[in-house]
Amino acid sequence: MDVGLLSLATAVPSYKAAQRDVVAAARVVFQDDFEDFDRLAAVFFSAGIDERYTVKPFPWYLDDQDWPSRTEAYVDGALALFVEAAAKALDKADLVASDVDTIVTVSSTGIAAPSLEARAMAKLGFRGDILRVPVFGLGCAGGAAGLALGAELAAARPGSVVLVVAVELCSLAVRRDLATKANMVALALFGDGAAAAILRAGAGGWMQIVDTGQHTWTDTLDIMGWRVDPMGFGVIFDQSIPRFAYDNLAGGIDRILDAQGMARADISRFICHPGGRKVLEAIEASLKLPTQSLDHEREVLKRFGNMSAPTALFVLERVLAAGDLPRKSLLLALGPGFTVATVTLAASGS
Image 1 (cartoon, rainbow, N blue to C red):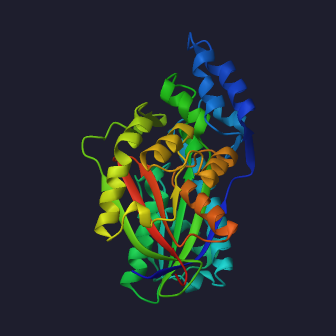
Image 2: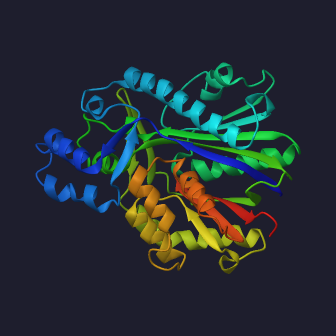
């Protein structure tokens, strides 16, 4: 595979939530539901997050929002972020929307039919014969998996331009009506954002996508995902996620790299989805990386929180912006399934 990453762009909503304000609001709403609220609230301070962006002002989340109101917020907010991120990526690639042949849209935090890229067609000027590929259910793995799918589609149609957009409004999963530890973790971690990438086979670009991979562990359906009820999505976050990553990630990555004729020693930089501080520590330990070496990941987590699918692409954007690109890197993200998705990247000319 030889697919060029022509551009990468990100976008966030206009509302910013400081972690100190979030925990203060959570205390007002939930302290009567938990006898040990102060102990539970420690997750807000240990998550490694200072602030994140949300599609609605924070007081909106403290009201009782039902499925229709959450869906309306998703369609409006996700579409706006899709358009902004896609437009930025097209501009960086010196392309216009009518140049795009395929759109891969990755989103698991809401439902829209017609899907987001269809709603964006008139706003951005995509052609009527464009190939639309909306993808749902990948969760946090979606940024890496979506980029991988876009690369496979670009390689299958040499010369075609593929736009990959990952957009998630994780904040809409925060539930005032659910006094659960998982909901508190979601409240401590989640932010909203979007990322867009332009791909074309054999076209140079910032980096080359040379291979992709995925590994799903069986009997792990209850580790991460959504629980759906009349009010909306309820988050499933098993407390075993960091331990599972520590115990299993290295083996999964080794199987993926072995199929590509490589080993971990061939990778100059692992570019990881920062699901949370404990997950990052587990990734470093499992892959035997130096402690605190996932520095761009920690900075993205600190500034934006866990935005699910786009977050890994925010990290990739920071790696690209820092210059001195790794000779070979592996973008990876863990998500429901339980799955790790990877994209193997090489610096152009290496």
